[in-house]
Image 1: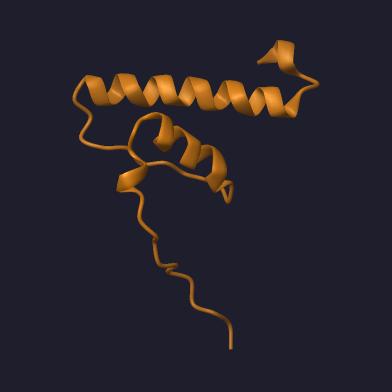
Image 2: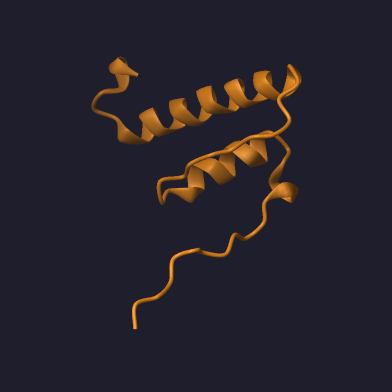
Length: 69
């Protein structure tokens, strides 16, 4: 990651690759599922789930935050 210090797109790609590998290993070793915090950046998470062949498992989640009146 340090070698990609001036390359935010490269850092993101590496992060997606590493997270995908980690998720694959967790699932292969019996993890019952994955819980992912997107921090309002859903695209990398979508790419990870697609790489895992799990995009069919994605579903919209209704916000629990009430709109201010």
